[in-house]
Image (cartoon, rainbow, N blue to C red):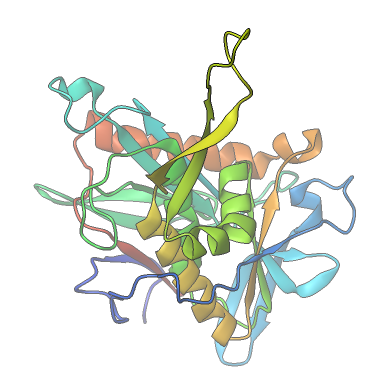
Length: 307
């Protein structure tokens, strides 16, 4: 009998075709939506309590289900980076950045006294594979050196959190489970506004952003004249991951499953045990790559089997 487990695939091994397409100016981008809680006074644990979901053709699965809409489920994501802002080019290996990702898709709620079963996650090492337990439905993984296009990119905290969103959405075929909306809970505005607001503009502008700078000219009797806007353009960071995220959102949309983002901005939301547990897992994953040299090289797709 097949056992629940987590598999990891590099792009060449992935069960779906690796995309070489890029989002260019001619592309039409339909961004994800914003999730607005039905009751802002409820914590994420209360708004999406743990429930067992069953169907005739598959085993019962624990999921965080919206108490106001049984076709919506919750994923909690986070990322962490040791030596954030540093570069892989640092001469001192101890100063090089090391990122980690984590996402929570099931498990015990804050008021639950029963711990959900744990499943092993295999991470490649020089000696073979090392098992990392998935505690309370939280999966963690070190951030890869390479992005989905095969380019080496320095790790940052923002990149780790964005990578966590992609990993969570790719982990299962959420649309085929019957969900009509997957809600991503995060406390990072960069992720929420990027996926729901900024992405179409970035694509239209060719992934370049304009930074306005003051321009001064001298006038008679004045040291400086009125400011005029001057512009310098720079590339948008993490383009490869933003494209991968948008492609996954479109895949789920074809399965009649929308993706929405929930920004944890109130005290009740920020103090959620969901967020605290996921943050702790992300820090552990970042430490795996930094202290034990377990950083995977190639972009990896995590796939949950019977989870």
